[in-house]
Length: 289
Image 1: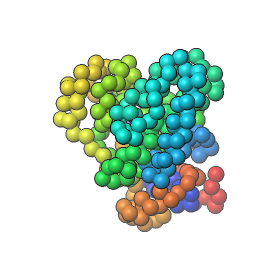
Image 2: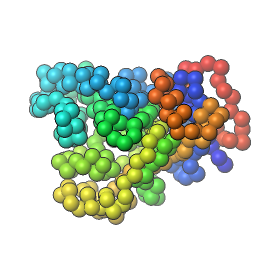
Image 3: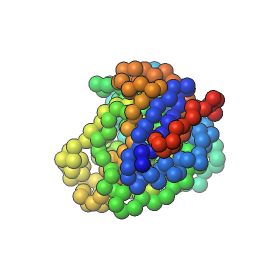
């Protein structure tokens, strides 16, 4: 049985064909009762748009000053555009470090926004300085329900994703091995490396290509000096992401790269979604949420 996922960005419909594996089926079951009203209201799902970068950096540096008025161990400095990846790696350690402390609701919101902006700036910098824009849309529930992965699911993790891939989102507080390796973060505290062992309905739509060879990861694993939670060949290391599906249509047309990317960059919000069996016609909604 082929299962499809329709998602509307503004009023443009993107259609994904889901993979035929246990995680994709479990994800579809988790998505069926949900609507876009389940998404976080305070999170901008779009990442990697260069046009947003300066504003995000200003918000981030202002937020650092606000957090430093109450945080016990002060965040050293602001985001440094002269050495962006080193700066981001250093600043990343402060979110997990403080997340588990006793904080007020306002402080928790500030820390959550800090983490959001950190990732948005990271993707924006990569779009600005890299060979291609790294545009993605991250759909995260306000109160996600998580279920454990099964041991066989770890074989589904891949270090390659392509333009139009639908990926399972990383649901933990911390950094996963793929992120640590691709940012060359050899200073990441080992207790902050959290391998994915759960899944939720949260997901991402990627509109760029990324690939990390197995030999490259193993070289980083060995040379980094990091104390890893598992051996390099242990599938529980969960390196990469689980692909849930691939983009097959954009408003009933083939998902041509340039047209699709332009539509994604111009869109402003996720307005609706559907999970349905390809053998049963899905009705286009008259209204969006």
